[in-house]
Image (cartoon, rainbow, N blue to C red; front, side, top):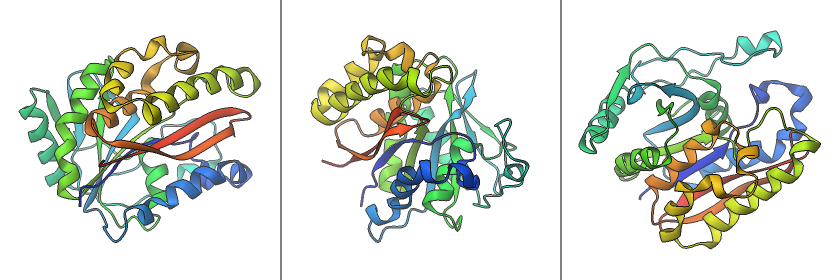
Length: 268
């Protein structure tokens, strides 16, 4: 069975290990924990995780270590969150396969044999498979954030869906650290409404042009002053160009009043 593609709003920092914020993340945790059920009896052979927290300057980079370390790429959190370990194995043969697919689409790719899991990867993976039983490989985004390039990246890796690889694109549908809480309430709602229309109501044929012109969306540059956390969505759209879309996670009270969403792209 062809696997779906996910675009997830992964939350802030190492939240699953911080008791004080546990309740506020309950909808996200529940949604992520439900993904194995959504896949039925099909357990992926691996996860390919496209995280907003890994950017490459030259082409794209694929994680190639068989047992990746941890990359604690967050600051100011409780001391114990820097001892978190998500022990999923890597899968070097998948890294090679990704590099091969990108080359077929004239996309430059490199393998990094040292890179560890960043929190855009290990946080959602822990919520989905807490036993770390599914191998995981990360794939970078490009630091230029070009929508067309990342849609092309998604098209290049689409075939992995038929090879029992679960593609998860990890970012945040609203990401502006200067406008969280009350100041972000309205712009996040406006941008989320545009996402809802574009992904759930418009036709698949309208989806890519909308993504290419995302800056014209209401409150676009407030929602994403720096669009690193939106870029994984472009990859998901490319990898599921003709698929129906379902919103499987929705909150209007994240980060003290922010609207955020996560989406599943299924075969039609």
